Length: 193
Image (cartoon, rainbow, N blue to C red):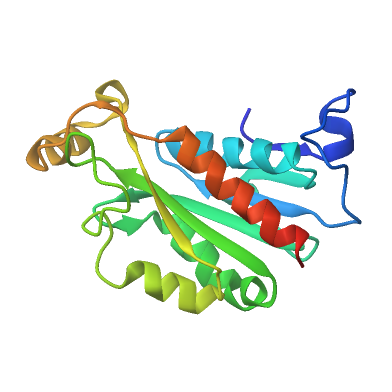
């Protein structure tokens, strides 16, 4: 199940040196729009990484987020299709831009799949100016692009044609270490608030 709520105190009954303990009443929403599940898996990993660092987190699908007023910070992501964020994610940003801009916000996307392996932060994965536009609209600290995943079994006919037309290869191009490091950076920035 993708939707879950974690807080640092309840995530594990044991305490280890990597956990710093819960912060005062701060909750971070980690939410993503994902067509085939790969971006949801990234959001779940980011949530787990934040919890490991003592940050209370709720991880949800963007479509399940109804009230963002109770969150203190946001990590919002989307799969990339044909150079843009999914419609559901674009709509979420449009509707909540003012509230996102008032709080600490980070944006991410997954979908860079062209190349062997795809280049990190592939400038061609997103339409020109999209990341800058999203950051400006939300006041986000940054927009991070991660490699994506292509599983031909999950794609429809048109998607398969697009993948072949782009000369992409089936595979999982997500760099979990890079994702973990990015989440750790978010935790450090939240700690410094």
